[in-house]
Image 1 (cartoon, one colour):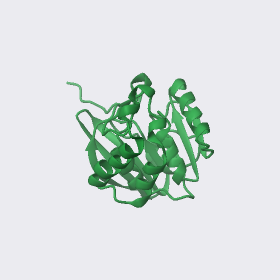
Image 2 (image 1 turned 30 degrees about the vertical axis):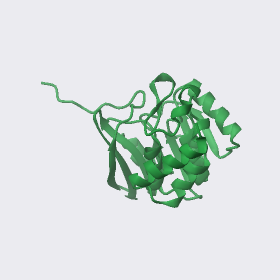
Image 3 (image 1 turned 90 degrees about the vertical axis):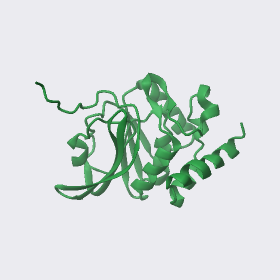
Amino acid sequence: MNIEQARENMIKQQLRTWEVLDDQPLELLQQVPREEFVPPAWRNLAFADMNIPLDEGQVMMAPRVEARMLQALAISPDENVLEVGTGSGYVTALLAKQAKQVYSVEISPRLLAQAGEKMRAHNIKNAELEEGDAAQGWDARPAYEIIAITGSLPVLPRTFLESMTIGGRLFAITGNTPVMEATLVTRVGNHDWSREVLFETELPPLKNVQQPERFVF
């Protein structure tokens, strides 16, 4: 496989045609070598328009979803990011290239160790990886300017909303198969948030997610 040609095709045929028009996310996906974060068995499909399987039922999001997320979050160099679900470490690397500091939480020790190796191999020093269950929120620090949740949630726990600074942005994919929505939430006041549905997609849920209340007859 011609890696560079495949990367260029991904940008032209997937990202640009899916409303990813900002230079910053396009340049990031050009620069950070996605193929080096993909499991070896899937390397030939590193740039395909699909979720790539990882261990323990987790996945790498499709490139166009990653790019739309970065575009929507519009991260500034002085902002701190909470990432829920380190996974392969690829999105962690993308976030770290934009942000002041990334705090990434992963429930799987094995995936966390593998991602840590990738961070060291790519000399990424502003990403702090932590083992833990953040499906209901993560309040290790007072608040975050950016929250990126890389597994789906049936419902978004309010804990995440309260963990955002005013002006902060959160990306989450919510709902149940087959209808899930990628959503950008912005905190606009102490008790006010705005919500924008970006697109529909499908993604495996985080482990231990909060299930919506159901009526019992």
